[in-house]
Image (tube, rainbow, N blue to C red):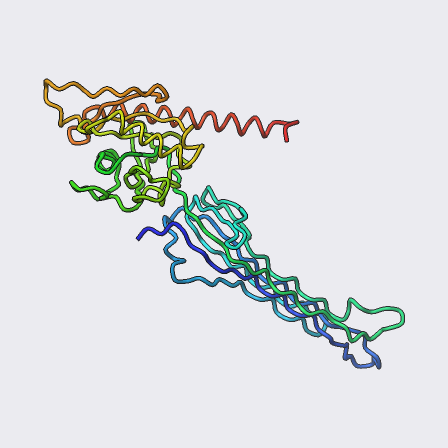
Length: 343
């Protein structure tokens, strides 16, 4: 089961209390204070793990608490600090405060870390409260409580190319034929009930990632069908491929409807570069002409058949090229902002 949203409760470990203790040493009639400090509580840290692909682990386990710090003791011994609690999530997870909806951070690359609940500070022992007029202080500090909050985790898949189309437009068949993914394929609508990722392997060890989301129908941005639930998974793609079947009653209208739903969902998706892919060309008879689609904003239009593999090589090479162009622009942007004098 694909789980892409979860709310959990996180609690940093409490700090240990400081100690009220005094020296007991032979030959020293009045030993001074010797109370050690309490240890700090552990933090709750969210860590991106490339081995994970869903938030299913949080479906039943909702509470996550880091280890508390130990109390201080005599002879100025500091209590041991609590261990941090590491919560592993898939790369591409966005973290927000579940109550205020404030953005906390996002974990893009495997190994990215984010502290979501800090542990409490350990209390000071009575050695810290000695004064010239009070050589045997009775005072010490309690450890602080750890931070508590409810956190919302939202997974947005990370892919180079996003496949968008109406139900039965051939998205799953295309993904299954060009990658190692094994999506469900059938001759009825909404066979794709959850996002699928596939890695495309080209010659010379070139690879890129394609995401296939459930079919888009009219009103998807308002919650109709399955599109709204999963449109977030193409928000991070570098380019979109809008799939229209050649046997569609009105290919032009279908293309416009897809563009409309993307724009209504997100201004970013409206501006995302896209190409048009006419699928199922094997259904055309020799005397049939390929449907014409007017798409001035598309960077290219392709006609393919996933069954016969006609046109697939040209499509994949073009998608690879667009992916590399986007990566180069991203690198140039990073270099620009990392240059001296730019902040």
